[in-house]
Length: 422
Picture 1 (cartoon, rainbow, N blue to C red):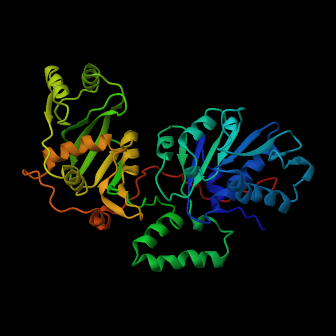
Picture 2 (picture 1 turned 180 degrees about the vertical axis):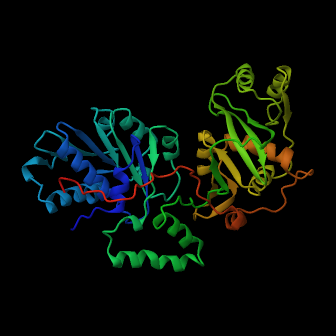
């Protein structure tokens, strides 16, 4: 194979963040580029330890291990005596090494430290596994994935150490014309098909895809609350030992709704809730779960304008339909609200078809927001009317929009010499 200095390789090399988050479409050249960078680092830096991790050992063997060995062989740098096939470690002559292991080996997750970490297709790895690996890495972290659905990566991007770069097949100039023609042939199908529209967004454009059956895809992220946004009130859902107590501030901004996470915590007593509300300068109307009248009464004693939510027939579906009528703007810091919106879905029957009933998880903040919608943004008569999951999913107004406002690096114009060792 002829390894070229592609735009993908150039852009990744320019990344400055310690945690390099690299989503991308199919054939964007992410894996090859990262491997070439890691091989170059090992050749240049004695005693460097690099861990390459994925969901399973077969996945590693089919993908990054084969790719790395091919790079070494095709560039004349492979030495069979330096590759330990049993432990999946390749050691360089300067004592640097690249090791491969899967997240299903718990002892490796909590084992020795490393200098550099690369998690290949990190969307197939749990957030806990990532956290265990990251906390034992003292230099660069590379995370790549196809954005076929939303997952914990949004939590990583909150870190000031994180930098995001989205790549597409157009960044891979080593790609054959045959593959390019195949990928671009799907653009015509996308003109008349929601399936192929989603496919093209993920695999051609590197944009987040839609989970089948997700209830809310009418949301995007906003950095901060604009000064001219108008506070409507707060939605509160009560929990304790097993469920989180949540409080969400809801604002009207032009024709959109902004939601901002204030409280998301288990084990809060009524006095704890009151103290947190005071600490966060919560002043305004609080719309709460009517199933907790004693808690509402106690909040009133603390001086808050707390009200029970009036619930009519099918109030859950009615509240959902009200929330789907607006574009929801979620503040960047509202990690738990984003996680709920990503995972709140319709139940499925035994045949895998969406039912007209939402799951009863990933809904603590959503329930509080729904209470406010019912009380402040719904009709005077709380009546669900007719509402079906199918109609909601096919509503063009609720099609997914890119949620990330993070930007990739600005690539500097001009020539850049290829690696010294390649």
